Length: 140
Image (cartoon, rainbow, N blue to C red; front, side, top):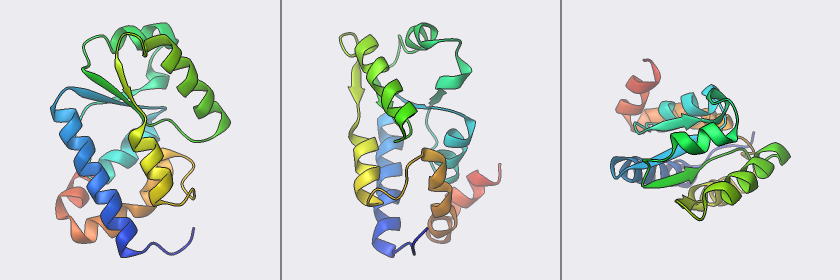
């Protein structure tokens, strides 16, 4: 991975703060698996994360999102992640507010270098140096 600059770190930190705010207002962040969830938490995300692979099928996943005010999709940017994003959008877009802003914003900030959410772990140390809370959460 290329060198991480301060502006990028600041933008990712702001993005995590925005996700925390969204979560505190009832939004659920949906990721593919545990490593994705761990990466977000290592960066300081303290909200509710739902992992796609912890459900047995998309129908059960959709049922589990029933009480969420909004669903923020943070699935990987590979072909599987794109496919799952489209399937989930088709299944819940008419019943729930679905947000793809954060996924798009991550692509912009990292200029496409980050293809999976778990790759955000590369930013953990940079953010922890300026945010002791993120470092403490990562060690839990």
